[in-house]
Image 1 (tube, rainbow, N blue to C red):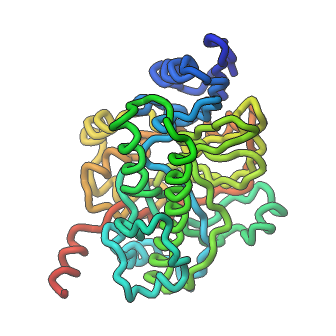
Image 2: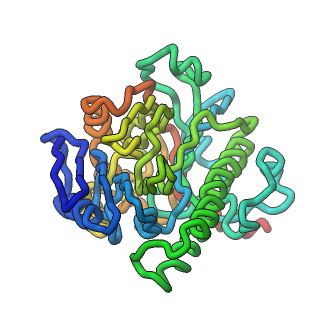
Image 3: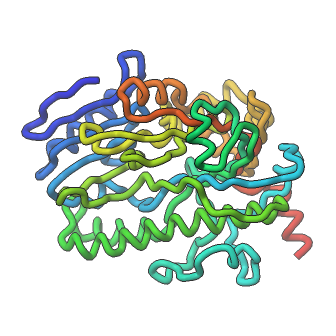
Length: 375
């Protein structure tokens, strides 16, 4: 861990010397630290470069900067218990619904969520999006803290749905309205931005619940409420200071699912980060390759068929071949290293791991075509 002054603000990177952190990402942290009003930048071990601002950093400032949160306001990860009679991954993979398409008004999933839609924004509701978003059926594997897991209603071999998605086009619309006038500058009217931002955060949570209900019903299970639902792209006011989180989860006494890859474990942790870490923890393994590099290298190393079944025996539902390569497990850092760094710096305690059975990214193209023919 290193702390260096930048003007009057500081940058702290919570990573061990053996962790690989791109110099460009650290440079972005220092650029952010030089902004007017910035007080402290806390970077997590999954830190990597973003568009104009680092991903995997919590940034405390007396000034509100919408670009530090980005366009996917409200993006987060939720965990839902699910009970199935038989969990045969290959069969269940074929039963996932098309989460590129919005549910119709008669979809029974609507009855399991609040129909008071934040901001009245219905476009894209119930859909997943692209990039690193996913819905995953997983099994609780190793339990490190049985008592804590039990309080969450979890035990080894239980099944869960993990949903990673955000506010779809709503957050993008909010950021664009700001940047078209102010660029990367501060919010001219912080209360107005925060009102729109809060709608997007609520919308993202509703969206995760609706998708979980759609998937549970398609798999023949009863939808449930989430036991974890933490947003990792947002800004909050804490002690009069704007705390911007971009790819980091709230870590002040929260339970957080830190995502690995579709071919590795993920970790459910009890987060207990303090002020030096801006009360935040990592949200995932973090990219170690750009999408272009992952696509180029992946096509040399892997076939599409190899990427659709992972080394841990899980299945990947993804009709977008380019996305398969861009999101290959090898494009990400080792989740064990990220978790180890969080533990070493006393930011989180592992509670349990989850092992993927089916990871959904986009609908299978052939399956979608068969459905369209039937309709």
